[in-house]
Length: 313
Image 1: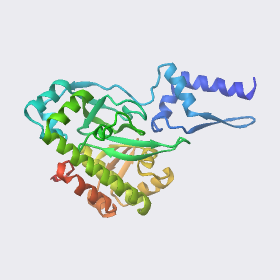
Image 2: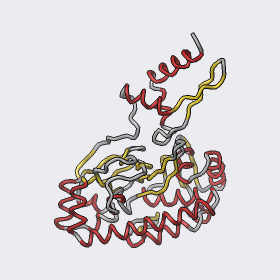
Image 3: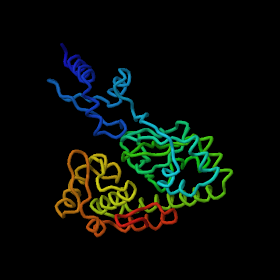
Image 4: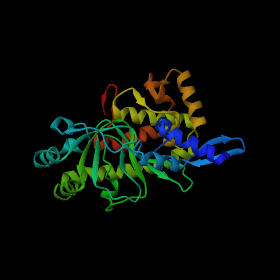
């Protein structure tokens, strides 16, 4: 058997055993990275997309989860999203009738690049990530959405597609509303449209702040900022997250993120194990974080979306 045939055999055997699904949990939406296999004649590079295609064909793994249990939306659930909490009467009734409360696992697919968007998602305690992927397969987070807003940013700007991917970053729940009902609310309810405009303005303004943050602030400061914002959005101290995933979120190398988290852990501000980070000293993280956390809170304060341990802002 030639080395190439031996490698192909090993790949087939690995996929058939479902090992790739375990490996894929440490990847981010099947980015075009490479898996390295060693054989007697040297290093052979296998595109991760080839693994993905094989797994999809065998129905073992789909790029971007698209499922999750759904339940009925209630008036109480509407209060958990900063935009929907201000709806009432016929608007609230429309969302309750046509919306769904969806369980959102990590990597739950909201939409893909250049794909038609069919639904608007309003997070209640999950966090969505908007990711830009380069031609070489490297990816970086360019925006996040929590309970302060909605995934429908491209729709608010008149589009039906976008150049970025969007998927669930931190698991939780979100209200899913079909695009037709979303547009009906946006065009018939002035107050609802104003709230959407406020969110869009804050979101775009914070994108500019993040650009400066990624250029000027160190990894430890950015990690602290990201953890604080995420804690505000999910309402819990424990955040399911790997070091590699956080590295993509803040635009840094995994090794740098591991060092930064190690320093925060040694200071007693956080703890981490088994793919989750737990905030143990919020005040310490506040002292470590860059100014961008405070900027984010001010930008979204009109929506009343951020909460601290001692109450809502």
